[in-house]
Image (tube, rainbow, N blue to C red; front, side, top):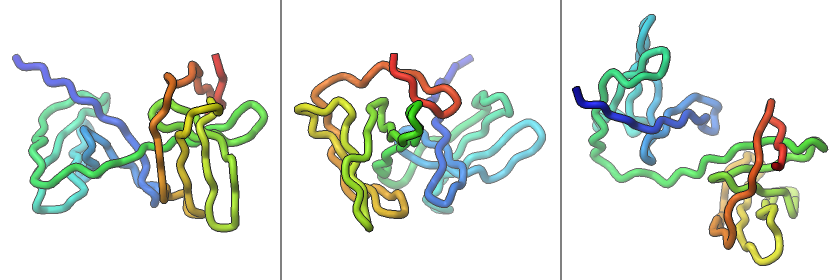
Length: 151
């Protein structure tokens, strides 16, 4: 028996719909029955990539041959500090709101100093510009009930 392991990350799109992110490709939940869920590529009918998961998230079957290039996605997670201030997390790195204007806000790496990593979001919380290269490892922290706790 061949054992196939894939990493499935569940994310929300801008409209709040649940998507599965696998190797840079997004999938929407197409069909479900009492035991399984079928996920299909979001690029539409011409891409036949799909997979089936059981309710306990075991892969039953899958076809991951896409007929298109993968899209670059930035998975952005919003949490709060103990003080209630918001923090953004991208790839385990944390960002604080450094500048806020009427149309955008600039988020900078919490390390400060020489690290130039930052991104800009508009009022719809869409990333409009980013430079996400860091000169240090990500901080050590845990998230409990949506609250960021530095270790």
